[in-house]
Image (cartoon, rainbow over all chains, first blue to last red; front, side):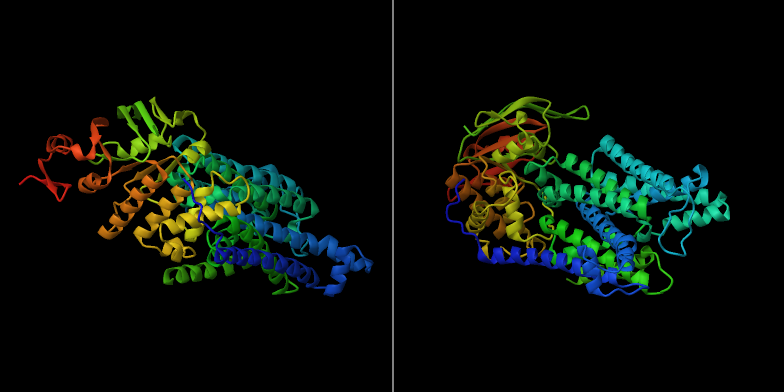
Length: 356
Length: 251
């Protein structure tokens, strides 16, 4: 075919430019909020001191200690966890062609919670250490993390295994995930029933998603996983757009639909498993943020995925900062706040969506 | 010759869906595949562009064996308009741009945008370019799907019931437009259909499937009542109305 008379429509260029600008603004907002989050807390720090400390300039040792040992790791953990959960949710919703696609509706977080409970109960693993003063502290948090991670991956493995047997359709994946979620919830309840009060406290505490658990080592691991998986998701934006148009249309455009679905599902699960294993369960971010971004920027994954990445990070950073300050000197786990905020926001989005 | 299908068989779960399918298609020709529900029309289209892997046989597009190509190469050769296309929240321009996927390596170039713009103009949809496709009518959505297949710059277009859910005017608009594209670009095109009268009006050739095998094939103007009755099990009369064949159930 020959299409000689086409022009590049200026209106389309402006339209794409607006989306790129929105992503740029989100990036700038994220940096500014990071500075603000580091400066706010029980010991207030001026923004200028925070900026100097981050730039490696000369500041009092106390400021450096607060910034580099306490607040920056926690803030970065919040950004990376929010970004990871949000981008995983966006990818899962597309791969599964289901608006409820998220690590939590697919049983991956339930599997992690079961793994942590099993570690606490039978392997002598302990509760995560946390930089918050009133947290429960027990020995060997890495064992709990490792077992939770292993069970998350096992859940993803079962979903992918069943999909290989029955065909990698969205229905098979979602239904397998729902069944696994129920199974692991039952397993966790079983363990909790027989746990003593210390073990029970440890199990329950582990499920509270809390960014204060992260040290630099955890931040490094979560960041590396987030960057690598996000790069894969961004590289596959066209494929996800094509799958949105239907499996047959996507195949007609040369997309290996089953392979894209399997690999995407595996990486989204892996990324979620890293976050949950290190920080606990942080609900609703993976579900709600992609829907919020879709309303603003549309469903084009070339923009949806980077925007979800940035907005997820921004939202969890803001939530984490509020959770630290709202009941000061007590500190709320951020997962409590995201659940409180997420549910009404989700209902609002549903109502807005139906009115449109 | 654009397309040559030779001795194509397709089995699913031990059941033979298609057997001994054998036909040719020249550039600029539109072939309508006809037959009762469940006879294998859609399956045949999916075998031609290797969405389904045939059990045996060969599919050659301009002498290249489609069944040995990678999916990406097939998409550069064959444009496929599925029966149903979902409506994500993309603009018309972006939805059509998706058809450039097989050509784009990493970044969309101005060349790709110009082709999309041209295809949208060809289909008279420039006023809809920045509208989200979930706000379009069925006919407009079908035009988007056809434009997407066009910008793939294929040699062969496969259309699965392209007018099945459209009103009369949209059907006529889309089929006139398809006829124009096929002639102008000298493409081969195959569409599955249920409406015999529409097929006889727009197609150059027809192919009747019965029980997964070709019952008969030939020029659309030579279809006889006997063939239609044998395929559908319904007696019909075929009238010539102002030079056009009209199939009506026998009184």
